[in-house]
Each structure stands twice: as C-alpha cells, then as structure tokens.
Image 1 (cartoon, rainbow, N blue to C red):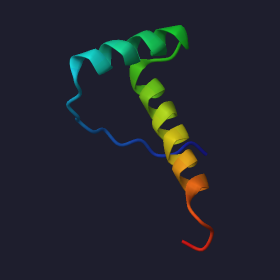
Image 2 (image 1 turned 60 degrees about the horizontal axis):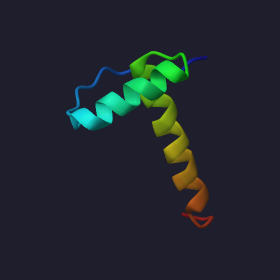
Image 3 (image 1 turned 180 degrees about the vertical axis):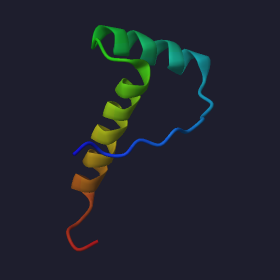
Length: 54
C-alpha cells in the first residue's frame, strides 16, 4: 500500500529549485517525487545515526 500523500506549500531559494529540477530530470522523475525521494533518504540516514533506544 502506498503512503498517503499530503499537499504542502513551501518556499525554496531559486538556486536550490533549479538544481533540484536538474537532478529530477536526470533521474527521470517528477520534481515533487524527486524531493520526496531525497527527503525520505535523508530521514532514513538520520534514523540510522540515532543511538538505539531513542
């Protein structure tokens, strides 16, 4: 089952948006899907850094 999606509005620096669009195109993904992928990877990496028990 796919996770539920929630529409959000954020403001990003234009240089960040431009680079993310380039990377999304290189990865053949829509912009929002690419952002979701990199945020998920980042959060997973944070979880791995936490000591167990937290």
